[in-house]
Length: 226
Picture 1 (tube, rainbow, N blue to C red):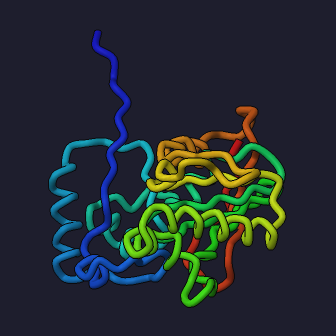
Picture 2 (spheres, rainbow, N blue to C red):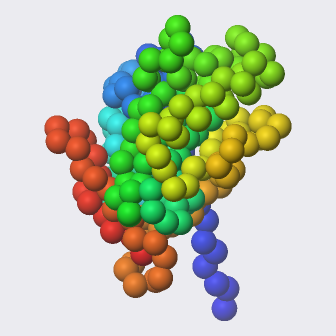
C-alpha cells in the first residue's frame, strides 16, 4: 500500500501596483490589481484537485484576497514572513528578529508574546533604517558600506529594545562577513518551522508563543503554540 507524501506548496500573492514598480511594500496594505485578481483565480485552477490540511497567509489584504480567490478560505492562519521566521527562531525571553531582505523585517517576542513590527520605517540618518540596510542600501552604498550600516543599525536597535537574544535573518544575512556582537544568524527556512509551530497542538514541549492582537488591525486571532 502506498503512503501519502507530505508536501508544502508556496504561492505568492497576486500583482499589486507596487509590485509593478518594484517598491518594497512591507506591511503597507495594498489591494490586488485586476490582473492580480486574475492571478489568484488562475492559482486556484492550477491547484484544483489538491487537498490541503492547513493553509497560512499573511494578514494583509493582497494575500488574504489571493487566498480567497484561489478558493482556500478555511482553515487559514494569518501571519507575515518576518513573524514566521521569528517564531521558527525563538528560544526564550525577549528576542529581537531583524530580517535583512528587500527592506528590514522586524518582530519582537517577549516571554512568548509575539509582536510583528515595522522598525525599518523608523528615521535613520537621512532616511529610514530600511533605506540603509535593505536592498536599496546594498545597491546604493556597496557591500562594504552596507555592512557598516547594518552593524550600526543593529546596535542602535539592540540598545533601544534590550533583548536577551537577537536573530538576523532574511536573504541578505549571508552577505555579512561577520555578525554584529550578540547576534546569531537565522535562515529563511526557519519560516517553515514557524509555520509548523503555528499549527502544532499544545503540549508538544516547545516554547509557547502567541500573537498580540492590535486594535483596529486585521491580524490573526491570539494563537498559543507549543
